[in-house]
Image (cartoon, rainbow, N blue to C red; front, side, top):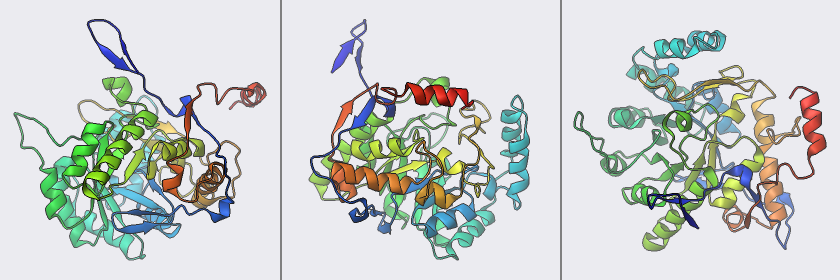
Length: 386
């Protein structure tokens, strides 16, 4: 439904995670009988979860461990790990920086140029452990870095920016030919981020192997405050999934949709799948792992921007191991651990044996779903200082 707010300006109501709920099914399934595996870029993932390409979240060690647990960590090729031989000295500077100086310090640290030999070394470090290797870069660096990634035997290449479109205009620099990269690089290419049916469809048409959905929802991202742009994740996922379904009917090619950002709890993750996602990506949940390089901190990917930073360093704390966060057993009661167990249990309650069946479950608009009858929980958490 559309509304008008004056000047014939039409606006559409959009929905985020906290405004919807999943309706239980008329059939239930034993969670142990559910299959959560998915195919991504010709590879089978046992867990349909990706860790964001953020320096406080994914280093080569985390990428390796996630791969062994069945998920996928994405390494940032524009980050600290490809700028410094010893990146952890720089991470310590970021972690220990005072709040009023951290943006300046991060900008200074990221002025160090990326070293192509480190790109090669980091990828080989991951690949020698016999796990999938996914790496990410901004569009401007994609033509050069994808060649290095291919030589180092990376499996998946991600091209990611705040907003990516097929059509781009600039009077001062040449535009990156995303279609040429997809068709000639020899590596599967995931492209993002987008939030609309039209752009998602266009990215699929030029050969994207998967599409990332989300502009500004991340816990450490300030794009929505700084630029005022973005679409809540439920609506954007529904729209981009609709483009995927249309493209599949038209061509017979299925291009996965990945809800990227804004997922704080396992409930948010489950809602993403019901909205139409094939996989999800998030950072803050993994930043809480005791193995995470950021030691309970992580920072937005656009935070180092020299002209207009659009990120924040946030503290999420350390709550458990990577395995506990992903596979359990959970030591918390707030949906921030055992994401896989929550996904299987949700699927069981709606009667879905596979992810594609979960996408068919019903969503309802329910802005009171997190507060209805929960007064005592709220009072207890406030009293405990949470």
